[in-house]
Image (cartoon, rainbow, N blue to C red; front, side):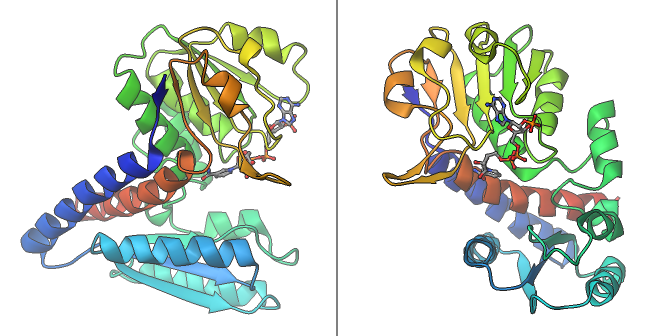
Length: 281
Ligand code: NAP
């Protein structure tokens, strides 16, 4: 079984990006800039944002975090996004989710200029991705996709099963694999026989949020299994896949932690650089 080492692949990607930033700086005398807006003091968001900032600095991006208290007015945030939209030094804008209840998430997402939408959540980017056009792609599925391609460069004709249909994971992941000519099935909480669907799959991407849902007898021999889940349990953090037993049947499997997580942040940096390059055109 191939253990898909997300930490290692992410480190390689960051190194490539670091070189790219050096070249861009030499050629254009400026570097891509990432601005993150963080609202409130929820511990997980604070940790994610700190990691994003550290990684952005490592690859040479100009990174900035704008912090607001939990009670900040929606208008203040929207006005700041408008200001960042106009700021030439800012290539990418990310508003860390989740947001406090009084702030309309969709309004926030739609205020970010699509060309600076490093999360790929703006409807314009969602539409472009599903139409097969150039777009920002949400960071987690992009990371999953790059890991799958490392294991199997030619995905044409493979049967892929997404478990979960969120806008964040399942749907964009399905679009990426469809573009690679996979035959894609998207499953969700109302799917009748999830085990039977999974048993057909050459590739399974589990993004559900149920600890160790995917068992060994759901997985075809030699399938590639990507575990997006992050679940806190009494035994620590586990994924949506029963790692020990599935590792005995799968061809390749991501661990949790150390699989999809590190790739998500590396892909945010990649998206920022892509936004910068598109702004030069
Ligand atoms: P989400 O928005 O809650 O979506 C979960 C999806 O799973 C929904 O489509 C839901 O179906 C489906 N589902 C629920 N129970 C199911 C069942 N029994 N069988 C089949 N499908 C079922 O979650 P998300 O934001 O996509 O995140 C999923 C997991 O990934 C979470 O554990 C999250 O923490 C993790 N995550 C990890 C990263 C990372 O960087 N590694 C990034 C983002 C998220 P319905 O649509 O029918 O409700």
